Image (tube, rainbow, N blue to C red; front, top):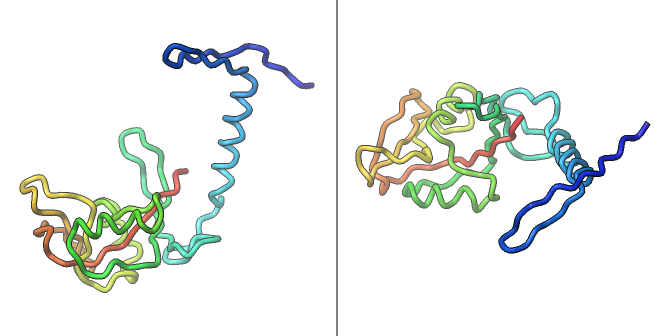
Length: 165
């Protein structure tokens, strides 16, 4: 048995309107949901292993905050050569728009789950320090601490992306 939806949804667009059959809209939404869920494997690889079909390295599951969805954290294979903070933050999206330098919370997860990917030294996070505009947070992968440093300091960085689940 097939059910047909005959209602039309009307969107106001400035001085005009767009009439979309509700069935078409529902079908497009379902198709997008199916594709999105199909792009992420049901079983994640072991920590430190490549995500299937990519060269990105699996760093673990991250719990979403404040109603956000949980996600898998993946680390890009390339390393930003030591440089100032802004250059690192600008570099990550050059690998693909979904990449960024990890935030402070993600950096702590990287220390715990995949510290072998880091040379036991300081790496930039994407977080500016609230106390001074010319400072940003860095993560030490030797002892796990985070401190703020002048943005002009030269540290390496890694890029991460998130697969929402």
